Length: 634
Image 1 (cartoon, helix red, strand yellow):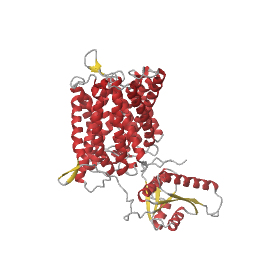
Image 2: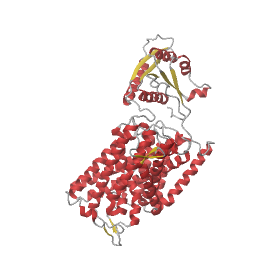
Image 3: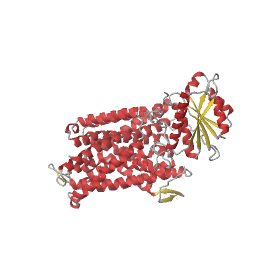
Image 4: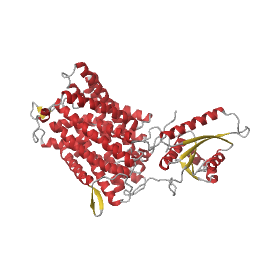
């Protein structure tokens, strides 16, 4: 079986991104609906609609920024390019907080959905729900370390399971529960909900639309970022907004607001079912449908809900790892965060850090009390700050980088000093900033814990830059080798000697990336070195089997990425001579080879084979020399 190429590759198509967008964003409804309903009461559908439309406006800026700068990092990358490294880091640090909160919240809700499904009330009670949540985070982290997961494959499961669950709730809810009168029952703005509760609910509603950064962090893996990302992103978000509003209508019809014994108004959707609101909606069908069917639906919603939340923990850890990789490579986090692991594709230290900090946050919130309220409040601090910064960065890039290739541009622009500026960002940035101020005014966690988190981040950034001997404001860019010829399309025929091991896999991955971009063909050759005491056509069955297997893997990997890979087994006395001869016969434009770190430990930079090819091969030769520790060697 072929092994996946280590690294990030442009393999995602429109359906994959749409699945990521819907699955990631829609999964947040499982833990957001109850807390929003608790404060917005009968206005919950309209709060979700308003915030969802604002989220769509923000997504326009993300689509332009990601298409123009198809790198990992999301808003942190936009801000770094538009302003400077310190502001880019602080934006990324706020993003970390969002990822950690989503990990903690999703894990906290797993036992509530699972316990509701099987009737195990014990795991839904404090502190056992927190204990199970901690176990979920730890378990996902261990699996993520030991087994590499491709996010978009997981996203398809999330999207399908979430969509089926949501369609069931909407169809059955509108068939048996929906009532226009119930939606307006107990709704009196200023009283139910109060103005302070409504102001509190608006920032919380951002929790219902998580996942935008996860999609943006896939920019480096999208085949056509300028076309695929906007269409898929807007389709996923639009569908999610519609589904969220409809489910909220069903939920408020099932549990309309009513006066509480102590005064004020409440809804059971935000109290009794706060931590499993979708299961609560299904339970409300009891009396409208046979009990057996209701039990089946309850079990289905509970089990799928728990699975979707576990998947959300996994993808959030992956998103945090990709963000850490970007910041680590730009010398904003310690070097270990910028090192790719061949097994996990993201820095292992980022997985451990994300799991450890999110566990600490979850336990701390439980000790303080009201973990759902405090975690949701803290999330609003980071996400609103990030959204505002991303939109401002996209506007600034219109002025500072007018020649930047923008495959997608936000429509509806106005000219300011001769530069077209998107109206969406001019409207969206002030709105997200205003809601962020409302969060600071009404949310204790946002007002206190949020700034503390940012101060800690600033100290980390200063410490890392000082340890590297770099200025705080220095704009650090990745060292990019000259992989592209001066003449467009000159690399039409690429020779790659196939070699087992991580270095060989990475060399083939580089060849495939180049071939994807330039429409090249790859000739993968496996050289069987025949000893001098044996004839060239001597029988060497084991070597021949390995050669055929390695070439079959190379062809399969190429086909997965839409690249033609031709395979050839070559017999020779010396590897270098065979590679040079094949390059001449194939009239190759480029030979790609790898050089392991062990040769530099032997006081020579390249192996004898690489050295020979560099001196003798007529085409250009690209040598990928890896420092010790960049790839995990077997």
